Length: 185
Image 1 (cartoon, rainbow, N blue to C red):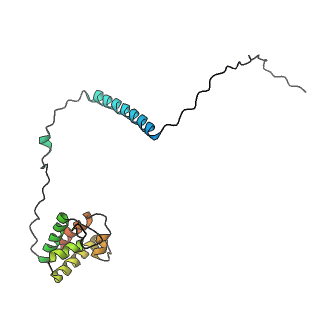
Image 2 (cartoon, one colour):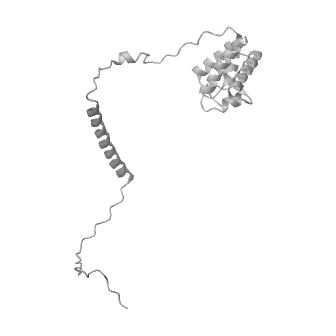
Image 3 (tube, rainbow, N blue to C red):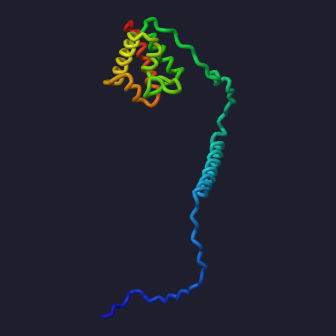
């Protein structure tokens, strides 16, 4: 049984083959070439965005701003003297230790590092000037302040060494000075 197609037969012209020279495949671009192209594209986009911004905001009236009206701080930072000392000895010691870390630097892993920076306990010890009872009271109040904020902490040195910067340890010394003053210590 032969089947006949319901569609009429169409004569297709036979394709002619022309020899087209084969194009060389595109060479891989180096990283520097790709970065240069991306940089050029991004520069063009930024230029277009800048023009669009200027066009879209041309109708908004603006007044020139004098930077002297905006910038009101000294351009050269100056180290401020320590605040007035607390009247109680432990609070004053913790405040001096805080100031020592601010001015002399903070470290972890040692009481004093090779640059002279100190840990929390090293600053307390330096400011206690050999008064071991005052040093112990200050360390106790500091540990209490730390535990109020961070829960169960083993010791002041372990808390100090658990931080990568002195921001939190210095803040805790300052808070401990306030706590010692509130307790009359």
